[in-house]
Image (cartoon, rainbow, N blue to C red; front, side, top):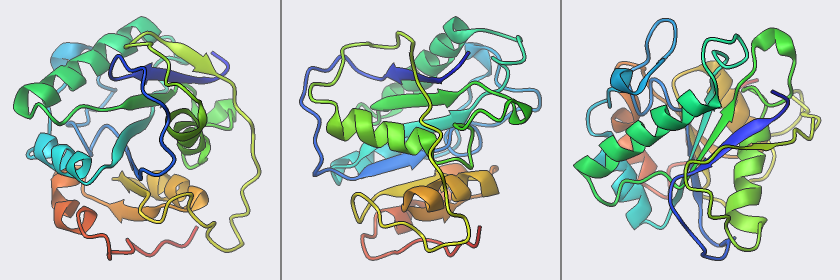
Amino acid sequence: MSGMIAHWGFHSSADADAARPIAFLDRDGVLNVGRQGYVNRPSEVELLPGVADVIAQLKELDFLICVVTNQSAISRGLWDTGQLEVIHQELQQQLLSRNEHAGIDLFLTCPHRYEDACGCRKPSPEMLYLGHQLLRMSGQKEQMYFSSKTHPISNRTVNWWGEKPEPFHPLDLMVGDRRSDMGAGWAYGARLFRVSAHEGIQAASSRLLNENDIGDAFQP
């Protein structure tokens, strides 16, 4: 597995829209309950409280929703991209069953282990840059509803000792429960919101909906 895995959350033929902000969301511990030893099957997907309503509120503010998740179980041979698809389908279905406006637009996954030195595993910002490219710059969005497509890694250089980059959109944000999530968001230039894995995205909901909230401070 040499690249990042993309699943579109909807059938879409709409043009990419550079004017809309993107909410980049970690998955386990932000949207659903994380499990020791991975979320391995659809039956293990359990939404955290209030997640669907927060996503719907972000979409009401015109955010595109992009999940960015490290899932090294694939590289470890525990399961394959087909299993990843059905896990993400289950997550999407649970969200939409709770709020019809709560769908994820794009799921991006790094399937590698830390020791693979892949270039896309968070805290690398590579998945966020790919989300920006696919959602904003790719002309017509591909109609690939939950069908896996692998995208190459650019291996961009991050200056962790420099200034935080300027975002592509001033409202772009990253929500995560780990330092690696904050690092990826910082290196992309997004506003950063760290949450507890026990509470998930709901804990930051009022801040996410406040356009004047510049996010959490972070030192790489």
